[in-house]
Length: 541
Image (cartoon, rainbow, N blue to C red):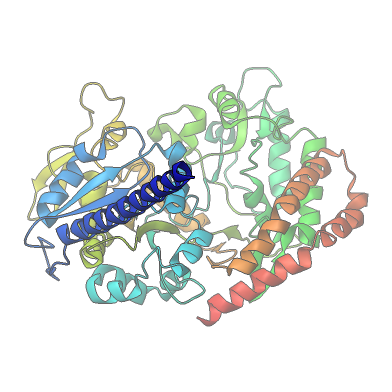
């Protein structure tokens, strides 16, 4: 009996020891946490110029790395630290792993002070709403108004930018990357004509209607424009990603393959009669072998191989020389595609890029100095700041020719060990291969070369007059997003499948009504209704 009492007594002693140790450990962790916070007290910031703070402060940053260089070694960030007195410790998982790492950081609560360059594919609009409302991401609108004059000026100049980054609860949880360059209207790379083929056939005026386009494609197929004596010409080519889709849908009055807004009304384009006529036209091209039969299977690399063999008449890419293997100076002979009209659309239309990338800079709740953080990033929304972010300080990619006049000399050769100056630039600045926050504008002192001028003039003539944003950047509520997620995946998969079948003739267009009925049964009306609500909310804000 005595032995049992002693055992019970010892057991209670052990439990009390564990309890007391746990309390002590908790107190130590709390003290350590408090100590960490006290290491980074709030500091007064300088509202103008540099440095941002008089005494150096530390912050942490999570960003996607491109593998070009460690961020701590990038000269832009090193020099900016000296300018600002703000030192960052960087956590830069590879771009391919970044989304996973970011999700883990949110789940574990082990977040850095700043999330940089994530973009909306990684820091999604839904995540902004969710983590913002939980208090994990800080609202930025007051910080912007008080400490970020460049961003505030941008919002005042174009209220749509502010509307597009303001969530459903009225707060801004991340900053955008805003583009104002000569190609900022491009939703994707344009379509281009093979200039050598046009010259060979004596074509002086580009097609402006679908009928004229069809006739030119027939000439490309039958008149040996590449001059090799073989019938190997491919009049129109595309890849399985279907990059030409939007350019050709525009001829039938459609701006988007999916949700679009027309005069305040939202519609789903794949069930419109306009889309049916687009499919009929594409089926005609396919049946007459004017559209590359490998369109729905080939990769961009496979299409490029055909272009470099001078077998493509009309093709899509960012710049035409990417597909043809020509030099930029030779590529000025390849005219940009002119948006077409048809009996279904008297005015040409093409998709415009909103030129706003969301999710590029967020401040977390653990940041001890959010005022300094917003001032730090605000510089990159100025001309001077973006020049510095994009091209670095003097002596790496450029040098002053006449600093007073603002003219620069740009280095043509990359240092030894680098394939190009662009490859080298990726080791100097984080503004490479990711959505770095800032106002993207033409670099000061960098003169247009012949190809740049050609692209600007083609864009101003052929895209700018006809480009329209299909649907604004909106935010959905958590409930709306959940509904959209349940509808969207199956819907998009089905219409993509059916588009290929209709164009190749596997599914006759006589089955159109059945196709529309199937989509209606997939809850497309609710899908449109949610987007209409989101659009109305955006328009009224």
